[in-house]
Image (cartoon, rainbow, N blue to C red; front, side, top):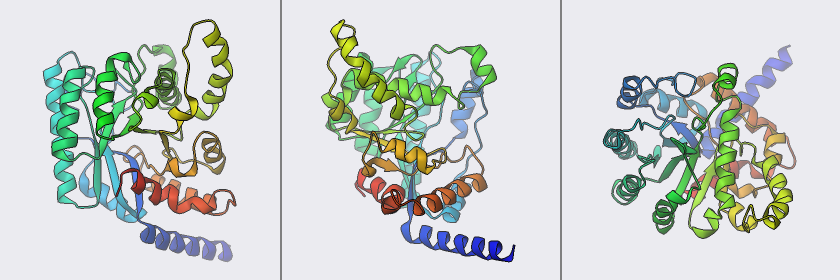
Length: 337
């Protein structure tokens, strides 16, 4: 028992020293503003994603980062999309969010980056906001919901927005939102985060691949959340079925390598070595990034997940050479910092 305690203390000290030295970059975390929550409550949408949004404040976030050895966090707006039929209202809350993030980035140099939210499904309004956020506010990328009230990433209607983002070499962080349509009976038993979020993310990326979005707009770099969701399983099946679908005229040609080369994957959800090895079947090691999903779980759980991943990866001969890349270098390269 004494030996176990000593080993635990040594590992904790070693992990803390490593984290401090490496200064981890967290590409998947959220900040939840009071104005955003007020709009959700106004439209009775606070539980639209089938679970309550957690509380957030900058001091608590910085304290978590300090404990976990995270040098920089990339912020993005959570679900749901604050659009309830009024584009003006949506534009207002999105603008407030983006300007708050820009101010936060300026106030805490090096600590925060942000991927700006957009007031979709209004494409013209989204283009205006993307230009303002990237060109004026200094946003580090763009966050896109898998769908904005039924308008899915990859839809033809979004091509003008993709062109604007392409011209600005934008990083795009995807985040799952409630599917549209959705089976209410199923999600009453298994909330969205249990199954629908990975399925929804996979659905959106498959839509992008099917329309060769990432080949047609090759300056885009897209971060897929939650360990690639179901893509490591979906892509081989899609490749196998595609020739028959194409022969029947149901699908067009797909540049598989071209599309996949622009996809990155975060480790939010507490990835195991087995999961990471599955991700490596569809992505190079340089495209895997750490993400915490703060503040959706407690600091203790998130810190434990990070420590477990670090220890398991270090003990795995296949993964151990990539530790610095996964937790720091890949994200810094992606965001050119």
